[in-house]
Image 1 (cartoon, rainbow, N blue to C red):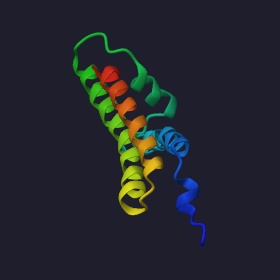
Image 2: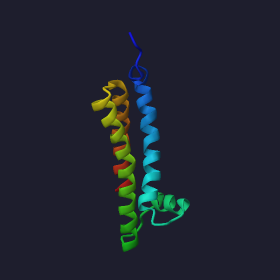
Image 3: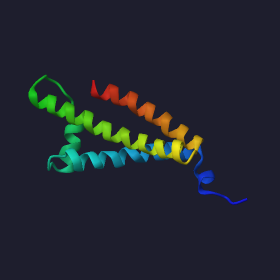
Image 4: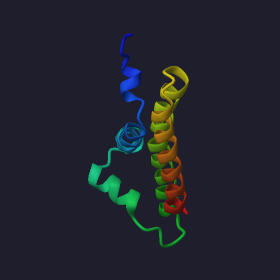
Length: 112
């Protein structure tokens, strides 16, 4: 019986690890797509800054924050699609989905 790579990667812990790595990759993709030529330090400052008042600038930052978090979570869902539907590695997929749900709940608290 030939040992396939899917059996090696079909572990819950690997799904959790990949679920932590993919949002970081999604963050850098968002930075290159919607960064608007800002330096990375200023982009992260606007992403993690507190929204105190309701003005036009804060509305733009809120939209940028939402779009960045969507990029971060969409990379996890892309990995889930390939792991569950294409390669059928279920335990790995369970780790991805569990962590994505936690990150999505945290994102809702972070945005609103």
